[in-house]
Image (cartoon, rainbow, N blue to C red; front, side, top):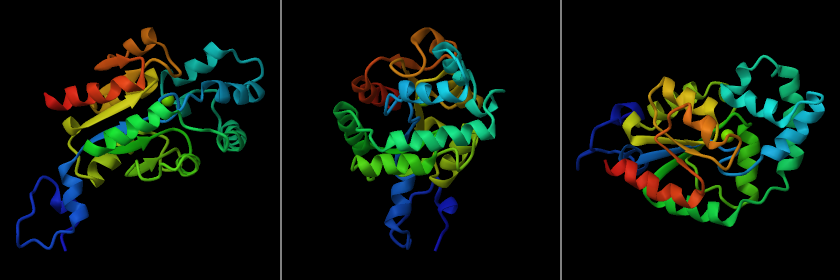
Length: 226
Ligand SMILES: [Mg+2]
């Protein structure tokens, strides 16, 4: 049986004993989502926890953690990160996804393969989607437990699912994430309703900045049409 890698860029023919799943993998375009601030607005939740870890940190200082990869910020130590996740996991159990985001994801899934590349913990996100009955939406969810670098996570997905860069779009709410995507020339659509506002996002030169999840489907369709 051919391996997944061997199938990249090749249409199986009648005589192939190609598994349907592998064929499906080479046919789709992909939308890769950041989680926090895009799928769920977790800014206040995360800030309140960090207020206990980093005494007197202002909201603006906290937002600055995400101007680059959060794990490269000098204040973000392993001990602080562990404390954060322990407290965050308790809070995450209560989170209910907003209806318009759920609907938007269901619509996108009809035409695109969907992934999550997040700095949050993969297990935490798995539980979030389980609690919200949405485990069928994402083909794979990669969190901090897979790798702290988003660049490495993008590379892994593209290789594993035979995705060309031009067939992928990344959706995020922070400048740091856009800059990581830029490192491998992965195009980004930014949302300005999460951790960072429009002015800061613009510094990363995303393709487009949207203010409502409902604008995402037309923006994605528009990009892949070109
Ligand atoms: Mg985010």
